[in-house]
Amino acid sequence: MGVAYLVGLARQRSLPAAALLFLLLVDEIEGIVFVAVGIVLHRVDLFLAAQDALFPAAVLVAAAASVARNWRRATPAPPPAVEPLELGVLAERIGVAR
Image (tube, rainbow, N blue to C red; front, side, top):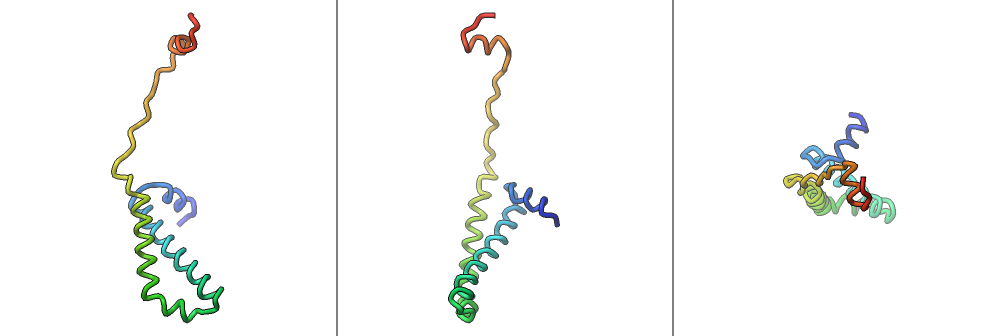
């Protein structure tokens, strides 16, 4: 799978984009905690022992963030108003007669 496909997918608000965001967040949360506890504190055993609580918490946080980002997908925004750009209309706006 190409990186361009993943970048395009991440910008969308769709079910695959939500799944990708969920997986990335779970991975990032686990990675940050591993670096903080396992590497900085030199306690890899503590990181492995905390997986019973850490992994479900990471899943819940990632799921909440993924759902919150894709929540607005169900209600699309209305299209912006389009005004005619004719010469007469522009001339009336600035007060110049033709």
